[in-house]
Length: 349
Image: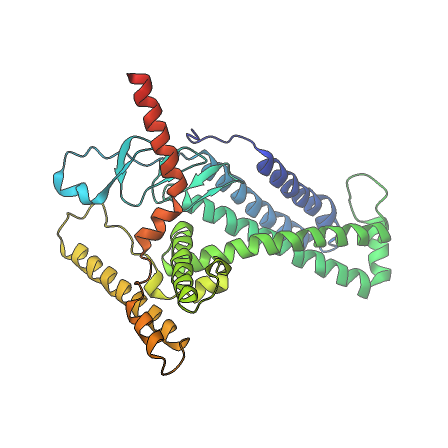
């Protein structure tokens, strides 16, 4: 049970090592290479603030227990907003999901982060987002600074050589003009790799926030789209197994709203209120849009004027709903839950 702890694993050790190399490289190689004292101090303060922010955000996100609050079930009117997890053997509020890695339900489940060794949910998503944003800005600044220094070394070689030999205060000795260029190139290459990884993650979560979705909800939406496409493939006599789920920022930005799952009703709102009625209506509209979209896709790919194909299209099943996709997604979890419950009954008897 990951009850809010900072427990080291291989991913955290690898990430901490690379991150530490970036920080040490900036203060021991990048900063001393800046000949302007004011710019050097300013860069060190700004970089230190970003590094400190990322560190605090990491420990906050990793140490926060995102476990879902157990519902008491006393209010019969609120039962529609509750879910029973047979794996936890507890009732939780709608919007929570059981994490197989943490073995517990998580409020506002977004995803399980291997680098945090913890789930990201409603309680620690803000810290996670701050961590990603600060790290992205930190690495971006380091790549820009390294590129600028390389340009300075190449464009003003005489001044650079004189500064390195006389005024630069590197930790230890032996830093030469050639070794500085080699070190900068190595750090820029490392920073470029990190910038691609963290930049994609940062952009992805910015798009998620803009769409008002969680990572899990987006995956469910993509699985629903894939299920609709498989239905079309079967209708056309093609292999439905060729349809796979592809999750990326571009697909997220152009995600059809008909496939975007509706958020569960707020706990503070009483069942039967106007807000719930509006959400129910919106859900029905989205399902209708999804059905219309699937029908248009089928009609587009059918042979014109074929009576048999027309009859097949009319008899084709509606697109898989989000709830069905969710059930398929957690089918393995349900099997484990049933097996666990059966074993407990045997022990009790």
